[in-house]
Amino acid sequence: MQLNMQTSPVKSISSTASLQPPAVILRTGSKYHPFLIFLLGIGVASVLFPFFFALKDGDYQNAWVLLWSVLFIAACNLLVLPKSVDVRSDGTIGIKTLVTTWKFNDVTRAYESSFSPDELMMPRIKFATSWTPPHRVILCRKNGKWDVLVSPVDAKEFVEAVNKLVDADLVNAETGLTSSKRDLSTQ
Image (cartoon, rainbow, N blue to C red; front, side, top):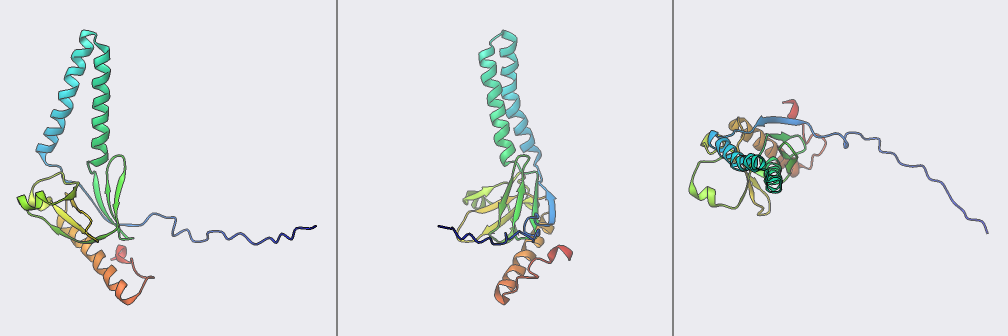
């Protein structure tokens, strides 16, 4: 009994374009309100002062608990406090923190927000770090998902780049074009 094993050529991935990260059309930093920086400093100081007093008194067990709580709070802040916001050529909006990048690929439009109580009470994913109106942008998402609230330094340019990208997606979706879908990075 002989097994008939045929060899087939292995298909290799010849297209490296799909492996490369998308080009960044616009990257802008996140605007931090001075009061937020003050609150973050107070939060860290309120845990570090008891830590040093516990070390001074020789209470090492409580000192370690306080130190680990500071590290936990810092890690949580590093996950959600944005460093920059960028618009990418593949249609995603990236919110970069020191630890990770949050990606949203279902944005339908962006607009500058005013500071109204109605807008604050809406369910949103809030990456906003500034409360001043020229630095508050709302990214609307598809299918009833929560909108995203960000605070780019250059809000007008960010809104224009997002809306230009979304409009290009809508036009290409209607015409069925896919090859020149993301040529906005050269404009």
